[in-house]
Each structure stands twice: as structure tokens, then as C-alpha cells.
Length: 226
Image 1 (cartoon, rainbow, N blue to C red):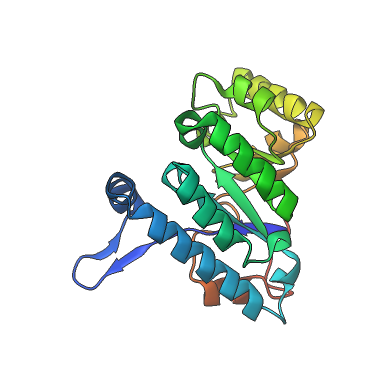
Image 2 (cartoon, helix red, strand yellow):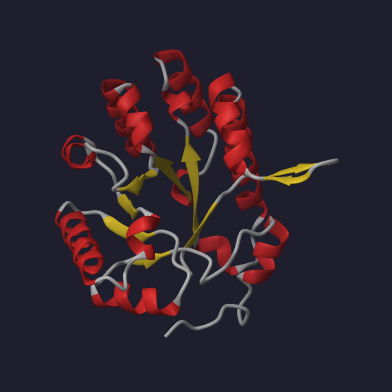
């Protein structure tokens, strides 16, 4: 195990666990996602600083970056100021296509600054948009994350060929490749065949609170994957 992804959940006192599919779009539309994203980054940074006696010391944690956090010069400056207070070598910033569409030049400059600070960056959900290839050409990313829908259909040889092509293209461009949404061992075997670097998904673990995660990564708790 080499890393994890930070996910936010809302435990409502009356309605129980509310899906991010419900509250994230509202946060995006209202602009509250900027404050929420900053809170998540600070919380992850605090957790990592407190983590001194577990296997997760050497792991990177990926944090999602909203297009709203990069929407204009002032917002980007505030976000960069926040990033300077965290340990760059422990974090990967995941950026979706929507952020690239919003302001290409601004995001281009942001990525350059993030790399100078030592952050690793990832293009999330690759394959969902119409201009993905131009993003690979125009922006420098360290990690390419293959969208879950490609992984869901790896029993189809055409989808295997598509993933193999993405892996090959990413490697030529010097990127690490992560398959998203892996749920079955058969998918792991297919990904090994096409030489994919990493995989994440329910096959390995479902989302869990930090304390459970710390126990999960203790030596002897992780299971071998054939």
C-alpha cells in the first residue's frame, strides 16, 4: 500500500450519513466548497503530522481540488498560501477536467507553483471529457487517474485495449497511472496484464474514518493481493 485518498463525508445529526453526491454540488454552487476544501486540506495535514508510528508515515494522501478553489487570481493565491503551510512531500493534489476548463492559464500557473513547492499533481477521472488529450499535451501532471467506467468493463477486450493505450500514453509522458474504482480481483489481474502502476477501490478497502485507517495500515493487517 502506497497511498490513500481523502474523502469528505457529512454525518448529519438527524438525517444520518449524507452522500457527497448530494452536498458537494450544493457546496460548489454556493461557493462554500472553497472553505470546505481548505478545511479538508488542513485536517489531512494535521492527521499526517500526528502519524508517527504507523506504516502510513511513508504514504501519500491525495486531496481533491475543486475548480472553485482555482477560479480566480485571489482565490488561487489564498489556496497557495494554505499549501505552503503543509508538507508537500506527503500530499497529491487531484484536479478534475472542470478546473482546467474554467481557467486554463490560471490553472497552468497554479500547477507550476505547486510543482515548485514539491506537490505531486494528478489529473482525476481521465476519459470523462472531450478534450482530455489536449490537457495531457498542455498541462504537466505527475499522475493520471483512469475513470472508473473503463475499469467496470474490463471483461470487454476493447476496454482492456483502451486502458492499455492510456497506460502506454501516460508512461510515455512520464506519468504514473492509477486505475479508479477497482472492486474485483479479476480487474486487478487485467490491470497487471496491461502494466498499470496502481489501483484503488473497494477491492482493497472502503472509505473509513482516520482512526480506522491507522489501524488498517498497521503491519500484519494488510492482505496480500495476487
